[in-house]
Image (cartoon, rainbow, N blue to C red; front, side, top):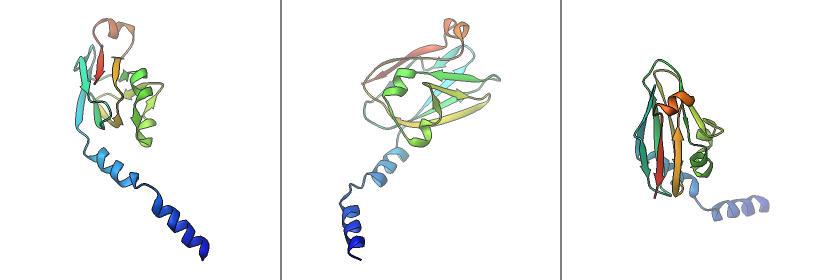
Length: 131
């Protein structure tokens, strides 16, 4: 019985970050990132450092696309379930679908791109600016 009281006392002393963090994730502003065959819109994505955001990647083409920003994703804080969506700094988006992930970006300037070399040369690239 004494162990139970000690356990409960320790549990009560822990910070209540879970519910507060979950609330921040739910109220995070959403930014659409449109992936087309030869473009990423917007070309420059402006975010605030340390504030949660929802990034919704929309692929409105009939071919699969990827959003690559390895340095950006490596430095950002992602929810556990969203971390699984990012593989080696890349988010894959199936044709005519969308993927949403929530993260807390860190200050910096990052490159973003999508597709193969030809698509990047034709304009499927841009920057992420986090101030």
